[in-house]
Structure formats: C-alpha cells, structure tokens
Image (cartoon, rainbow, N blue to C red; front, side, top):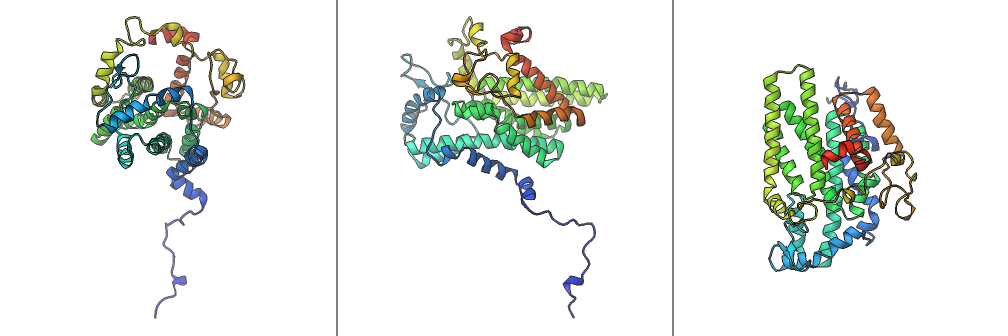
Length: 382
C-alpha cells in the first residue's frame, strides 16, 4: 500500500527555496540591468529619438565616407575629404571592426543591410550603446559580488554606476568609445587581482584579452586612466604583501606574471597603436610642442564644485545655467547622496583591503581632476 506523501518526513538540512520578486532580482541581475536600461532609454530605443550633441554631429559627418568605403569592400584607412586628405585609421577617426567585442555584432548587422542603409546604422548605434552600458553594469556587479558575496550590494552599486549623470553623458554627448573603454575597467581590475593572488592560467589569458580588447576600443584617455589604476594597485598590492610578510618568491612570481599579462595585452593592440604613434607626431596633441597647457587644463575641476556631489544644482544644472570655472559643461558631477553615504559607511564598518584601495583611488583621482588647481600633482603627469 502506497504511503501518504503528506506523512513522509522532510529531509533535514534543506532550506525552502526563496520565492518572489526579491529572490528573482538577486538571482538574475543581468535581467534587471537590461530592463532598467530599456526603460531609461525608452525614447531612443522605441521612440525614434536620437542624441545630437556637437561631438555626435562631428562623428556623423564622417560616417558617409566610412560606410560608402565599406560598401565598396575597401577599409577606410585614408579620408580624402578632410584637410585635403588625412589618415582615418591612424588618426582614430574610424576604426571599424577593430573592437573585438563589437566587431561580431557590426559584421552581422551590416551583413543584414547595406552599410549605407539608414536602418542598419541606427539599429547598430542603439544596440552597441545598450550593450556597452550593460557590460559596464554587469562587470561592476560581477566584481563586487565576487568580493562581497552580497548580491544586493553589488546590484545597487552597478545600477548606481551606470545611471549617474557623467556616465549617462558618455552616450548622450557622443562619447561612445569612452563608454566602451570604461565598460571593461571593472573586469580588468578583478582579473588582475585574481591573477596576483592565484597565478592561474585562465586568469592570465582572460586578463590579456581584457586589456587588449580595451585598448582596441580606441579611447586612449580612458585606457590611460585604467593603466594608472593598474599601476597604483600593483604598488598597493606589493605594500600589502610586504606588510603581511608574504613569501618573497611568490610575490615576485605574481608580479612577473601580472606584468607579462599586461605586456601581452598591450602587444595585442600594437597593430592599431603603432600607426597612431607614427601619425601622432603630426598632430597638435602629439607634435614637438604638444598640446598647450592652458587649453589642456580648461576643464580642470575646482574644489568649489565638489559641492555638486551633494547638491547637483550648486553651480547650475549645466548648459546656460552653469556658472562654474570650466568654459562650459552640460551636467553636474552628482553621484547620489545614498551612494556617498554608503561609501562613507564602508570605510567605518568594512575597511578591508578593497575598500581601502578604492578610497585611495577615489582620493587620488579627485586630486588629479583638479588639474591646474592642484598643479603640484597634475604638472608632472602632464
């Protein structure tokens, strides 16, 4: 006679599965990011709207040359329509199919439509924008989830990162390659840290790919900041190892393996940056005299504008309302009161090595951003 299932004892040690929206959100953070991005950028994705900032208009003026050249089966190395001709590839005007992460999507979409077809360009631009915002948020979540094991903390931080004004401005003002380059920064930090600690071959390979891919996204300024972070973390990691009296041979091995991964990652991008380096000597930014100091420091952040961290409208909301020290700006550097409070709280309740490092990184980054307003630090870097 079959036993009544209701009378069967439950297995000990098992916990009932949590159900409901909270469990779903913590289990599927990637879906949360996708949903929030679609809602926030609804007018662009579904409403037929577009971003038309001055930088974006400038890049649009080059697109006919790029797509017509691609339609003829020729790679756009030389643009004959600007200054009686100048390098397109070496001048970083256009580097289609160079980006390892974006190239497959570009190839598929442009295979579906002619490269000069308006629908393919619009769809491609919107898709890649959302793709890079998603990567930035997901890698941020991945880093913090691995380091804290707190899904909600990681999810909150990733959402706060992706939707702060200065990050939204990347796409809104036509700085798409800046967004694409920054998106890989959390992954690079995580892989470098794992490689230094564990010295495993898969972390070595992934770090090489991450660094090479970031450099091939062709925004040298953001890549430069990434290498500043890497250099600072290597110094910090070495100081921590010495303080904890780690075995010297293991420390040297970790640094050597990490350094090798960085070198190989840079070498991956050499076929792009060697032509750029050659051309840079003829550019106003890389010629004999370099960029003028006054022009380069026009957008130096000022200590007064730190108040926009707490009151976003302190020097105006941007545009015609802005009255700060920069020639112009279109948005405040506001990060959110809750975000700053939680960051400050971390320094009190969880001052581990990662919180300490990111606090140092944030402080140093702020000092560098002052530019001519803190020339003791900025001038040597310049």
